[in-house]
Image (cartoon, rainbow, N blue to C red; front, side, top):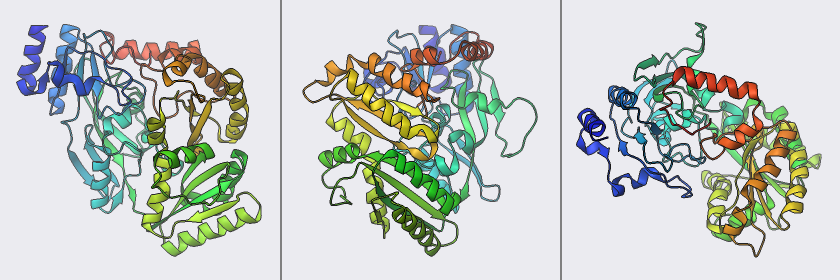
Amino acid sequence: MIDFLAHCRSIVGDAFVLDSSADMAPFLTDWRGRFTGKALAVLRPASVDQVAALVRACAQWRVALVPQGGNTGLVLGSVPDAGGGAVVLSLARLNQIRLVDPVNRTMTVDAGCILQQVQEAAAAAGCMFPLSLAAEGSCTIGGNLSTNAGGTAVLRYGNTRELCLGLEVVTPQGEIWSGLRGLRKDNTGYDLRDLFIGAEGTLGVITGAVLKLYPQPKASITALAALPSPAHALQLLTLMQDHCGSSLTGFELMSRYCLELVAQQFPSLPKPFAAPHPQYVLLELSSSESEQHAVGLLEQAIGAALERDVISDAVVATSVAQSAGLWQLREHIPLAQAKAGKNIKHDISLPVSSIADFIAATGPLLDAAFPGCQLVCFGHLGDGNLHYNVAPPDGISNEDFLLNQDKVNRVVHDSVAGFGGSISAEHGIGALKRDELAHYKSAVELNMMRAIKAALDPLGIMNPGKIL
């Protein structure tokens, strides 16, 4: 492959073709540190034309490539396998905000832009880009689009797919498709944009995007409610939606064990209630009118929930600092899990109406199969997305418990399927869930997906071994 790498160097320069173990190391290990792959080289283009030229070279030499943004993925979708024959195509140097159009409420960006950079550029123009998730300081827009990322504002604004109007993509043949049209209506045939969003780099390389912007809210109010059960949380969701409509922008469910774990690992964080409760909901209201309007809506809804015994107690943030403190409780759950030890993670979605029944049914099944296991159940209740993680029982080492991963997955995923849900809500499939996808997708669906893959990427060089 000396000729291939020499050609790549002629395209991007010697400094941006990394082939030493030390230089490649940061690009080869997944974010959770569970797996380290091998690569022929890491290629770091700085323009769309360079990306296209590199892809053409990969096609000519039949070299597989793994597109990578911030490498914050959770399903081994952005790292190469252990074979060592693929290259990593890092989009990190494609990091320019190309255009902000406040009148059209759009922003055109490079795929390598960090999500936080996009949020800040939108704010500087008096607008808001609402995608928000824990990795926003390091994940990239290209990765967000490739995995159709969700986050905490999906209830109001939708997944990344709903926040994108157009794409620029380098095809597996090295051609550039420019679909960067900031149109909300465009009925001119197949929607090619939707093929690439959520495809995890298996059909092409996203290099740019037109994103939707929204008006900045005049005020945001945060509250933490304590509840007896997940069923009560669903009642609260309905009540809040009836009272607040589209002003309800966040609705996060957290179990008692989640907050106990956060308190153990991060004792300096707020402790809003004197006594523990079985479940909690962190909710956020945003108003386009005024803070007084948001406070009024929230107080009315919380009052109705208390009167009807839907909630047991509630704390309303009265300052930006208090609001941030309440959100920190939610955001620190994954960090607390990591500090406490390894666990078996599930990113699932269910019909919102089925969530309480799923939780009630699945916990006993897991406890019967793995007595004493701990359930770390939290997530975006408003859009039906749960992070349903299973930690080892006391006295069982992480390593020993992880040997049961396939069995645990089967219990959880069979239950998800039984309630009409999905085994991947916002993290994608990657390599980690590839076999699980084959277990739960119908033959018709899988055959259609394979047909699309074969038509667009006949050489099979785009992120092989991911999804299919």
